[in-house]
Length: 196
Image (cartoon, rainbow, N blue to C red; front, side):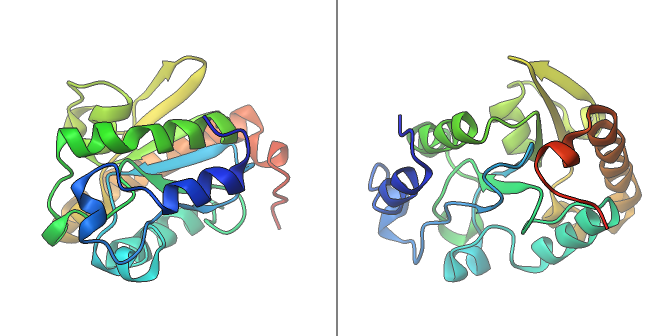
């Protein structure tokens, strides 16, 4: 367990714990404000993320940014975004359970250092890994669960929304619930982010 953010990041960038390291271009450690009170967690990098070394920068990332902006959140100031696995699975397939297990300690260490008050899981795989193994994303998205004093919510993955645009309004409702919860808890003031 690293106590220092830079040391954690440097160690993660050199990781060779699983086979995904053999096909990656870049490790996608995460991005945002490490003091943020809200942490978003996806399942793993896709092709654009692998190329740029940043999470959610492709088409689904553009959609995510729009939804974040609509509720006064921004990846550069008041949230942090990370993934379950830090290297792209080949052909953007789902990360295998053993890959998730090999990689999860990096995320656990990030959570320990960030100490978020709210975790938002983007998609079914992240929700099942972080919130509960039997999470039903279509039925339980937008529902807050509490684990170890942290509120956790799953929402639909932006890539799934691009495939099924009819689900966008439901996902946007999740973001409105998130905004209400952030305001209720006074979290934006706490992370030093001042709203304009």
